[in-house]
Image 1 (cartoon, rainbow, N blue to C red):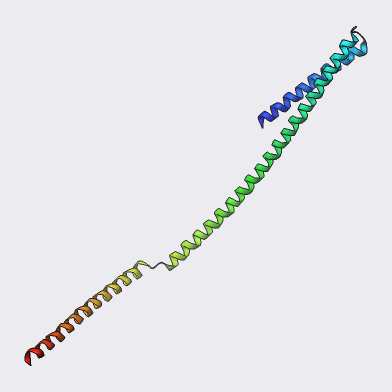
Image 2 (image 1 turned 180 degrees about the horizontal axis):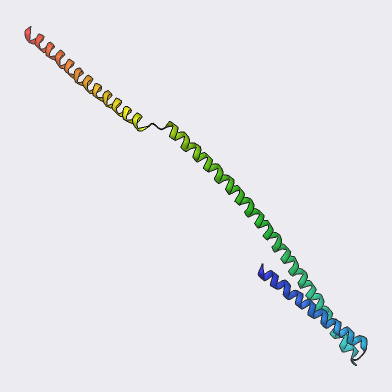
Length: 153
């Protein structure tokens, strides 16, 4: 942006200098002080060409400046829009996390409930162990009975 402004300022200064020179030459021509009219006419033509060139450069610099300005404004709008979208997304995520935490706190068992569940599991394991032992004992008793019947026959 700074280089575009500098180019615009330089083009404006060159245009002003060329037009000033052209105006001075035309005044000289009108006053008829210069004896070499042909040389003066050529200098005026050169000054006119220089002024035209300076105007064209100024026009190009102003167009470039305008393009940069439009791009800058577009970027600012896009950044503002992106910032708004990020704020909305952040608020949405914060709400969802808060809701999730609340739900999990409500669903999560308390320490007392966890202790009761652990005790209940222990009782189930103990009963399973007793049932397993009793089953083995019953199978052993059955085998012993069969063995004694076979031996007794």
